[in-house]
Length: 214
Image (tube, rainbow, N blue to C red; front, side):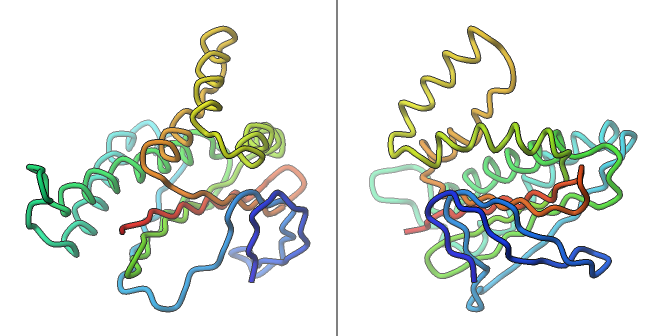
C-alpha cells in the first residue's frame, strides 16, 4: 500500500502491460490504492495515435458526458434544499467537468508514439468517487509536470497559488494547468500523482482524483 501526503521518492514496483516490472520513481499528493468496497466501477480506453487524436477529439467530451450521466443515476433526483438543482444534477455536472479535464490533459500530453491507450477509471464508494487516469509521457514532459506539482504539494493555500499561476501565464505564457487548480479550489478534489519508469524516456503517469460526495 502507498499512502503519501508529501512528495517522496519511492521504489515500489508495478508491472506494465507486458508484465515487466516498473519502478515508481516519484509520487505527489494523496496516493492510495482503490478500495475493495466500491459499489460501481467503469473504465474507458482511448486510442492515442495522431490520426485518432484529431478524429476523436470531440468524442473525448462525449465520453466525459457519458461518465457524468452514468454515475449521476446512482443519486436521488429530489431537489436540494433551497435550490432548483437535484443532487443528481450536481453530480452529473461535476463528474462531467472533472472527467473532461482529466481526459483532455491525458490525451494532450500523451506521447504520440505510445502504443498504450490512455485510460480513465471511475469507482463509486459510499462517500466519494475516485478517478484514475493513466497516460504515457516523455521523461522531459514528466519532469516539467513534476515542477508544476511541487508548489501544490507544499502549500495549503491553493487559491493564492491559482492567482499566482494565472499571473504567471498571462505574463510569460506556457501551459497554464489551470484545470487542476480549478478542480481543487472549486470542487474540493484531492489529487495524487504517480510516475513509473517504463523505459528511460517513457514515463507512465497515474493521476488519482478523489471527489467527496458528502
